Image (cartoon, rainbow over all chains, first blue to last red; front, top):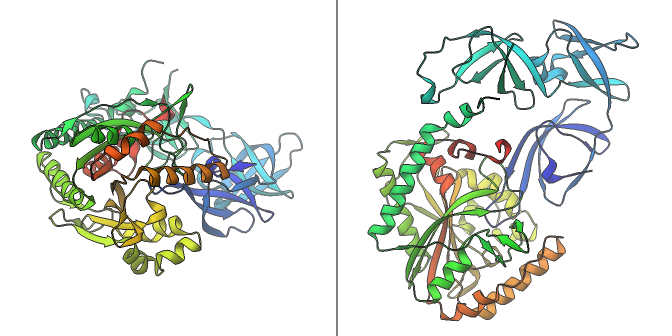
Length: 187
Length: 309
């Protein structure tokens, strides 16, 4: 069971027997009033989206999903292909089902494929991935105190803001839950 | 690790500078108007029981959720104009505009009511903006936001009718006051110019005086800047018996909700009859910094958030 205070982007909960994923989340609270948890929810089976506001007293069951470790193989058109390394069974997901996780699909990366009644619904990538920066503006040395960030592109094509000292060709670690830069990876 | 995470803090240097300048301007504003800066303890035995504000326990005592009880004891002891800037703690409050540890500016005036505090707000924010050299504010919708006085005033009743299409009494009895307030009303407030939302239903002002001639209305207002709640003010309730009853109601409600019970703040209730008619206000310092810095997340105006400690 989850309490409303556990709600966050990416959490999967069950509402009327269907699995839903929280796609947007905001904590709001009028100064003296009760806390409200405003969510955008997406039905993981039919893709329907709606907004709902919960209160602290609301409780949720976790969605009845099975998770299976699979390896990412390739992506063609709108289809992403993953393979179960034990049974060699292959499954296909649409771009929409993969969602933002496509930003973090490194070649051969192992992900959790979510299944609802044996149908694939989505994937979970590892919380942290290490990726190579493929394009970055050079760092104007001495600019570190200005505290600016700069945009870079990493090997998956994903773009993000990083500290100015990160150079092209370096490896960085990304927190895939927030999509944010975490640290530089040496070696 | 070799201090790699420092970049996140370094990236906020413009906002932290602005915040420091803003605090200096605030202190100068109150000094020039003959307010005494005070400090009161953060660690207290009994916070004011409010239904929806949870204190953080620290040993057998609590971290303050606001300094108001001690501030009013100062008024009762004869201090007539006081202010303080302090940390407050509210359990489990974390969002784009909330930190569980945040900074409050409170000020109080003896022989004043909430209308005087509206004037103070206009004066304070316009003065601080001028000292920071900021003009030409732009709202989040990209429209110019005009700080020129006087600012707009709208009662809670009018605002509900205008923006939520419903009487306040109906919203309360349907148990959707907060939902409508946050989803329909607040986003419309203070978009072109700051707005005071005032005269709350009595249930929404646990420490506020009721309006002369209308016992269903509490003399309370909130200041909104660009859809964001910035400050909360009352004409202070000075009737100790009434205050005790309200604390008991709130405590019962907390018990019903399974919230932590607090002891009754007896020394405060004991001092309350000596307090002159007064008005007090709490202003969110982090949010004011967000407004001046044009930032949408509270994280952007503090060096540290709980996630990176």
